[in-house]
Length: 345
Image (cartoon, rainbow, N blue to C red; front, top):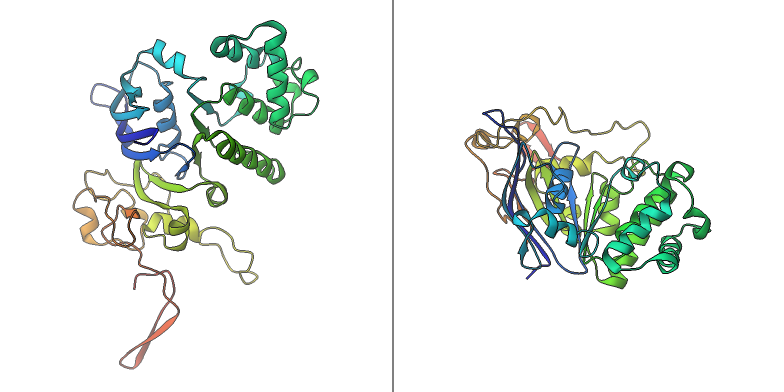
């Protein structure tokens, strides 16, 4: 059994006939010592999924459905008190914006030590020494002095490291990282990703990485789930997904990455339209208005997750992008048709 097993998770906002599903039947597993990625553009439901798992969504105006079993216990049906006991000790989260996540009027040391007091029973000098050790572990120089400083006195990278120190203070079995490298320069980003990888390798922590950065996915994740409009549209092993993306959305995400070996002046290949250009899943594939491969069958109801190719590679598409082919020339009478790699064979 997986440490975390999410089955048909739904999150609905609103009431009285004005409801909107932010998460629409998301399912995935995270095993101990595994890194699983949730990938997609803003508005696809990644962060809402994480907040639902942590029990941090408001009580009013929100409806939860499905199951989210953590070590055999359904997180969606647990009381607030039970979740408070688990947060920090068994499961923890690194939030996207450290400046807004940290209390601006409380020194870093107090924010770290209160976790140690709540879940590990450390007090006084013992708690301060452990807090300094945690800051040193995540690479913050002169940790004893930093404990006395406020969040605004730290750089963006240091604030993010302080959040990580708080998240790993009690060696949680599950760590959720919600875009932990947003707005950081590439050097600090690499250091934080290396730190997270070390935590997974040394502690056997299960890591759920939420990001829109495919470079982060390529360097860290074992399994990848691509979300679009609240649903998983493709799920595969990292190597399989990057080698053979089958859903047009995942394919478009990879094609839109700038290439260093591209000829000078070659234009980028963005996905046309925006996240607002979609239809309801009940009417068909939500990505159809932006898709270069759609057919009329795409508009006849919600497509199911299937395995059209490799085992374990699931895609929610009736006309998936087939395995890339080499440039080939097909004679059609007097005309010549050229098929390029990456298009449907």
